[in-house]
Structures are given as C-alpha cells and as structure tokens.
Image 1 (tube, rainbow, N blue to C red):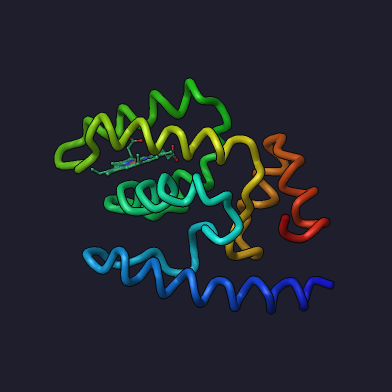
Image 2: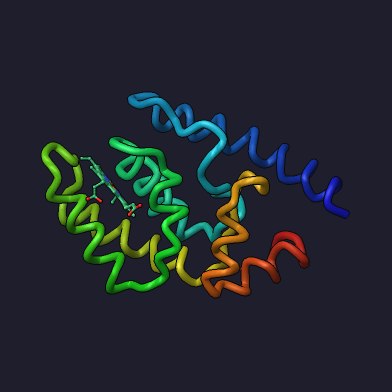
Length: 140
Ligand code: HEC
C-alpha cells in the first residue's frame, strides 16, 4: 500500500516541484524538505508558497516545519521575531498570510513530503494525530 501511494505522490511531486521551481527561481528551492502543495486544499497553496519562500531565506524550511510549534500565539511571536530580523523581506501582510498557513499546519492536516524526515514522528509526538490518520488513510 505504501508503494502505490508513494508512486502516486512522487508523480504529483515532480509536477509540483517543477511548478515551484518555475515560480521561485530567485532563490535555491529547499531540497528534499518542505511539504507537497498537491496535498493541500487549493486555498492554502498560495500561503504555503509564500511561507516556503520567505521562511527559507536564512535557514532551512525544516526549521519552522520541525519546530513542533502548534500554537497560533507562539507562531505569531516567532513570525514577528523573524520579520524583525534585518532584511527578512517579510512584510506585515506577508506575516498575516504566513500565519494563516502556519495555522493550517498546526491542524496537522498536512504531512511531510519526505516520509523519512523525523518531523512526522515528532509532529505525532507533539499531538497531531491527524497526521497519523492521513498516513494510514492515504491522501484525501
Ligand atoms: C532574516 C533571516 C530569517 C528569516 C527570513 C526567517 N528566519 Fe527564522 N530564524 C532566523 C535566525 C537567525 C534564527 C535563530 C535565532 C532565533 O531563534 O531567533 C531563526 C530561528 C527560527 C526558529 C527557531 C528554531 C528553533 O530551533 O528554536 C523558527 C521556528 C523560525 N526561525 C521560523 C521562521 C519562520 C516561520 C520564518 C518565516 C516567517 C522565518 N523563520 C524566517 C532567521 C530568519
């Protein structure tokens, strides 16, 4: 079951990866990290793209993705702290959209592109059982 799902996911990934590359050639896209936008509701994808772009400038995207933070209040504090870093490139409007994505992330309805990353396990440990459910049930 895992292999057919992986095959399906990897073909979606190649397509989305290409799109992302084209959309964001200004910076080096995160390698095997990040999430698969194909698994997100359409209305979340734009927020995710902005998050992936802005929040991978100074450190890997794994940093926020693996932080285990699931509180909107914590995220608001972190994003504000990041925004105020010199030349963060993050505007207050960006921050609002990024927070909307991070809220979605906190719901646990989205799971990692690379299943071998420790993030799934740690996210589940951090109390996001919906990720485990998504893994069992395949994509929705
Ligand atoms: C201008 C550079 C810069 C940008 C852009 C940036 N960060 Fe950071 N980030 C840092 C630095 C430097 C640190 C380490 C120092 C600290 O924790 O304040 C850090 C640390 C973090 C941490 C803490 C990791 C830990 O182990 O405690 C998280 C979470 C984080 N960033 C999330 C984000 C998010 C989300 C965004 C996008 C909104 C973002 N960062 C954008 C520079 C940046």
